[in-house]
Length: 274
Image (cartoon, rainbow, N blue to C red):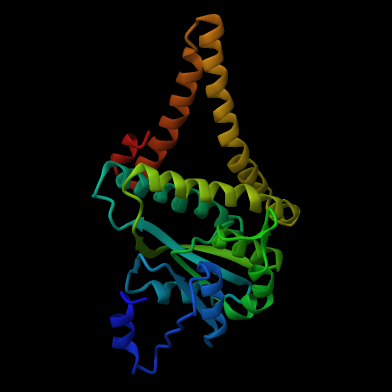
């Protein structure tokens, strides 16, 4: 609070801004809800504190939200520190794939399954219907403190709203530059994906069949990959034979995906993502 105090002072006398200081750190979700309830616009833009928006992001997201059936829209995420380490460069490519393959395909079939927290716009009238459910989510008997963006998106879809992806609304966010924080982040996201899949399953009959395939693939894919790797290790340990076909199949599938990304993005660096 002491660190951000000077920033607050800059905007304290500007009528366009309202600074909300909570009595204590209650987590992102409750802070987000306090801000939503304290604002008054028809549209609400969520931006993480480590994210910088391009100058036209608000305009482009708001234009998409003119359709009253759309409850939320997200922009494209890039890593602002992508040139810092090999890991940040890989994460930047991972973000491109997540946005321009996964989210873009989902949007084509009417429902982005997770509007990412760093840059997402919501319709106030839709949020008003959902905030109580959003605030009181529990996981294993405790108030949930992770996966806010995915859960709020699923609630939007359950309420009958569409969710969209806007590829030319660019937001640059800071990504982990060492493996420890990256793995902890990925664990949080994986827990969120598996947990909210159970909510999404009830939605799937109402959505396009492609989205059923996508959700099933997101959840079963990593498990099948892990089983393949374990089976290969077991073959090596028990039979003494090297499971070449397992390794070659996984490598080939990876190269195909990265080659398509390199072609679509027009950047050879995606071949290195393999």
